[in-house]
Length: 273
Image (cartoon, rainbow, N blue to C red; front, top):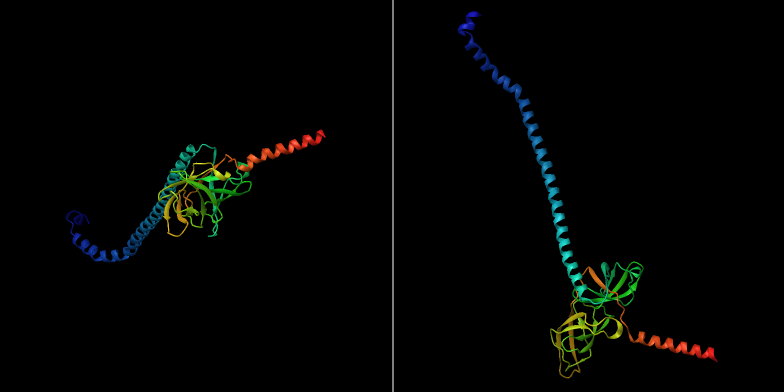
């Protein structure tokens, strides 16, 4: 052993034995190595799947937030336009938000989130940032129904802003059109004229934009021209609107005090006799 230790006489034998045993050792360890390799790969794949799922969810969250920010930006622009228009309105206004749209194609009616407890009254003018939308039709305590100017049952006294020509704008059931019947063929009205509220009839204060004339047809032999106008208000888009708080005086309001005075006079004379 001492001689072998000094001169390494058995080294070739040991190397030969190790060479012969190595394949056996490799075969014995191979399943363990394959198991470790597979475990690491599966663990890595599982980690990648979890990371991928997390990133995908995070991406969806960010996309949703971006959409919300975009919506808030558009809403901010709409509200800015609405507030700017409220500064131009001399009367006091109340801002209302759309709650519901009537799905009946023959009625143009919407519901807003302001009612009698907010001071809303029947016949109250409703505007958006671009012009007249309609009037309050019916009221509950916390909401109100608004009839749009394009409803077939709605009529609105208007005048041509250019020359003061008066007319009545009727709704025809089309959100993009108002009709102005009974205007003579020689009436001074042309395409592009702006129609504003005339203030007559006690419904709206004067001067609010209503529509812009898009078509004037004059046919020989017909006494009246066919006049079509497009509303300036975004009737199918606006979600926020202005309710004008000021009541418009009508002829009935002027007659009411006279009737009261007459009644009081009759009462005094009766008591005197």
